[in-house]
Image 1 (cartoon, helix red, strand yellow):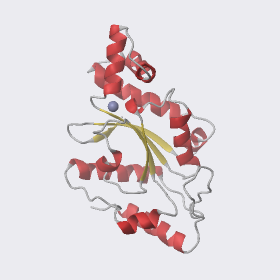
Image 2: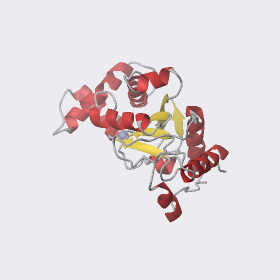
Image 3: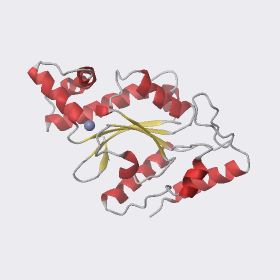
Image 4: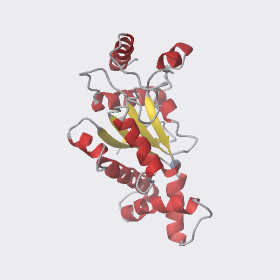
Length: 237
Ligand SMILES: [Zn+2]
């Protein structure tokens, strides 16, 4: 079933664009992206819509929205993603598919281990751009079960060895999640995966100067979640 919010929001944007209320952004860094005046997009509504889409995916009832020629032509002038997803690069974790969303709906940053802490300007700058320029109201850091990057961090802490090339540096960034979750009750890998998400959420909530002020006044929400490869379900952590 379609979320009425999603439809009304898109219809509003399309109508606003047609009537000249929106100064369309070109999608380039520094381009001005203005929402229609007075319209504040709600982080909770955006989260609700994502989770509803995931329920459809999990239940085999996807609708595959917004992927026709009319849709991509309509989006050519501007984008208004309602969420930023920071997910693992794992081939089994495709956010557009598992949230049953379409073109223009989510701004996705994918890097092995969904690393935020220590990931540097490429990841943080991409997130800040989507918040500052595109006004996305929600960020979700999305880990997943059986994550190879977290597994590798765990194994190489235990073995005290190193990995070849840049893989070693990447895995180093995940190691704090393993050490901080050590001794917690439950499965050590699942705990480390969840901790890795929590660390990323913590970093983004406090990231000055763009994200933290918006989080404080409620215009931006940062949440963590884990996707289960077996069930298809995304659960908030
Ligand atoms: Zn992974």
